[in-house]
Amino acid sequence: MTAAEWTALDARYVWHPYTQHATAPLPVPIVRADGARLHTADGRVLLDAISSWWVTLHGHCHPAIAAAIAEQSRTLEQVIFAGCTHEPAARLAAELVNVLPPGLTRVFFSDDGSTAVEVAVKAALQFWRNRGEHRPLIAAIEHAYHGDTFGAMSVSARGTFTEPFADRLWSVDRLPDPVDGDTVAALRALIDQRGTELGALIVEPLLLGAGGMRMWPEHTLRALAECCAKAHVLLIADEVLTGFGRTGPLFACARAGVAPDIICLSKGLTGGALPLGATVTTERVFEGFRSQDRRRTLFHGHSYTANPVACAAGRASLALLDADSARKREAIESAHREHMARLASHPRVRRTRVLGTVAALDLDGEDGYLSTVGGELAAFAIRNGVLLRPLGNVVYVLPPFCTTRDELAVIYGVIERFLDWR
Image 1 (cartoon, helix red, strand yellow):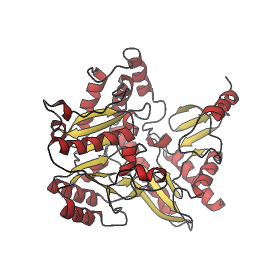
Image 2: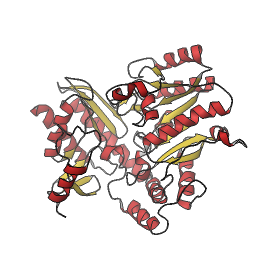
Image 3: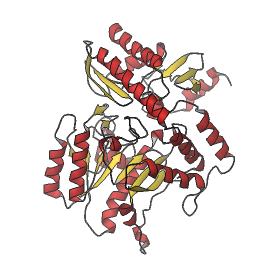
Image 4: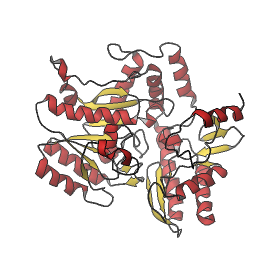
């Protein structure tokens, strides 16, 4: 089938995510990928500056991950995980526990980041119910994004993504964004007022991703963790974006020296090769569900929970997070800082920032996800060989770890040309 034929099928039958089909440009037809490069049907090469929605860690089509997928798919491709188990899941769980912050010992597999958050919130609420304690309140942070399923939307900030469903989302106690507000003081006040009702606090540690790549201090995360520990409130860390080296160390919580009660993982879990989510809890949380009373079971699951092929990809990706990967991440951060230092003086740029392999800046003009400047930059970048997907007026560079300094220079060169052209 020719590219023209299958793109016509796409136009006729496919509904794309986060896409207004009445106004969006036609999707870019990608036929293959390698490293940090995407190859289009018409022969162009695009640098993937966003890790294909923040998932690709080591580069596209990494041979070690591809080999693990191929080998596992010839042995066991799928089996129900309720009542069965298999080696890839058992070994991946053990290897995750080995690299996670201390105390996280029990791995509940799911499908993606939203489902990992759903599991975390359900587990936190039912944990207290199983103990006979009435703690129905969840606290969350303004500008947070935790996913698009209903529980995940409920703990996310209200805005463009959630507005159509506002009357169907359950309420949470919203704390101020730590970039602009005193989150710690607000949590302390909430604990003073309703501490015995507060079951959990959910945070995106150090980086509010879809809310605008808003970066916040390690000391704030430590203070929030201390407040939670003193008040016996469960701390849920949503590391769907920040996990597996994005902020420098393997986990943002580790960067701050924090060990949460529950951590949510996905995106880079398989190196970006296959969908997989994981919610990891402490032994204390797990034991809150162990009972002779079957009603205390966590009644949650997915058809593809712990899919063996995805777990094999996860193990292969974890093995690649070695000293060489750490050096590559350090080099990306260094290059980010150099380029951002230069861009900071541009008259159209506001608020540059860098955290590990993530760099972001705000463009002047209209704020918010619906700002048209993001689409203009995305189209300009595609024409110039780079895949970018700004969050409205927030431009970010979040590349695969294999991206070289020369490739980063190309990416930033495109951003600079757009700033001077527009």
